[in-house]
Image (tube, rainbow, N blue to C red; front, side):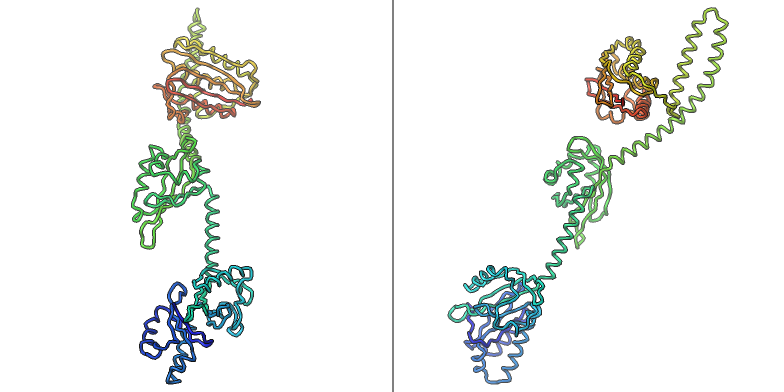
Amino acid sequence: MNRIGYHPLFILVLFLAGWFPFTLYLLASNKQLINTPHLSVIPVILGGGIIWLLYGNWRTFHRGRQGGADLEQTRELLEVLLQHPTDAIAIMDAEGRIERINHAYAELTGYTEEMLLGKKQPHLHKKRSEDIQAMYTQVLQGSTASGCETWVHQNGSPLAVSYTLTPVFNQRGEVVRIIGCSRDLTERKRIEQELKASKANYRLITENMSDMIFVYQPSGNVLYASASHTKQLGYPIHELVAMKPDELAGLIHPDDLAMVAKVFTRDWEKCSGTTIVFRIRHQEGHWISIESRYNPILDEAGRLDSVMIVSRDVSEVMHTKELLRQTDKLSAIGQLAAGIAHEIRNPLTSLRGFVQLLQASLADPRYCEIMLAELDRINFIVSELLVLAKPKQMKFQDKKPTQIIYDVISLLESQANMNNVIFHDHLERSLPTISCDENQLKQVFINVCKNAIEALPEGGDIYVESSRLAASRIRISIRDTGKGIDPIRIPRLGEPFYTTKENGTGLGLMVSYRILEEHGGSLTIESEPEKGTTVHITLPV
């Protein structure tokens, strides 16, 4: 226990750990100073380090000294050591009245020593009086108290400070003095507030941007995942963060997994950022294409700390690129079709003319009529081929869709019978009329029904049904009982030259898509292996 004299005139020595050897030398070289019972050296915690306090009865010390000059010199030295610390120091009696402060305390609070001597600390916040009193009670019971408070400067401005109150005991073990050490935290608090505001702004940006931000460590620990992951992928953030590496790998498309794994396992300390595009499974089960930029984050030593991934949904971009590729194919097909049509139509004109001349000279013109009909059919096919090069202008008229379908079934019934295929129609007679180009729409139904017939090489059934979806749309469904189509291949149906048939060209569905698009309709395909395929054609009323 530290015991200090009780006379009002005291000597205070405060110095940091770096001055400790000097004080030991001062004490060791002055045996009379060490042997005096009225002078003690005690440790005080200040600013996170130990500060030593030389504290004693000045008058007793004065009487024990032989030379006044040495006393004055020592007194000056002790005063320098008191005023040197940058922390604010105040010595108070047991009632909390100030007896001595250093320059740092005066600068911190704005009060001079003369203004504070014999008074309690006026800069303490009045609203905290109960807490302050409880703190002083704790110190008077012999314990050290520390914490952070907001003081009030002499000019009225707030001061954020950290403090430590240390009790000083007399020889009877009674607390007779309190030493308060304080440090200005205003600048630190300001920086903390700015940092907090900066973090809040960054979080506000990351939580509301459409790009997905994902940060992980080399160990696989996920540090951050932005809320946009839920918007784009459907997975809640807590589920995504809790996923193990093998679970995250299960979200990647099998065809892209090797590429993504290669990026994850690369030596980032020797590599810069990289960008890849891969497919990831949405929570609802479908695949979306995302573009991810991987950026390594290194520490000051150049070692990998973490990796930040910034991703965005590029499904629409990839779809647009695919459409552009198909457009390029269509352009090439159109040019080819135009050349073929021109080369075929020239001899067709000559053949038709000579057949007509031959017909006039024959007694039985039936064979010539058959030849002319076939030539007309060839000419019609060539005209259809030209649709790829230059779509002809549609002639829209109000027609009953039920009648158009019956005409198509009648046209294909002979081909169906030859393949042991039976048509079953369940058409609503009350369907409203639609505005359409009848011949073009017939071409769509012919293409779809012929595909259904060809999907039944051993015979089967084709069901044609109609329904009204809403006041403004109708749907025609054509379903076969064939072997079906692999679901992976369905998205590519309609591409030029992509077909599931051995001798197909892939042009029939492509033309059908275009015709329906010009009618404001759509075509969707549903298929189940070994159960058949259903084509839904939707048209506006």
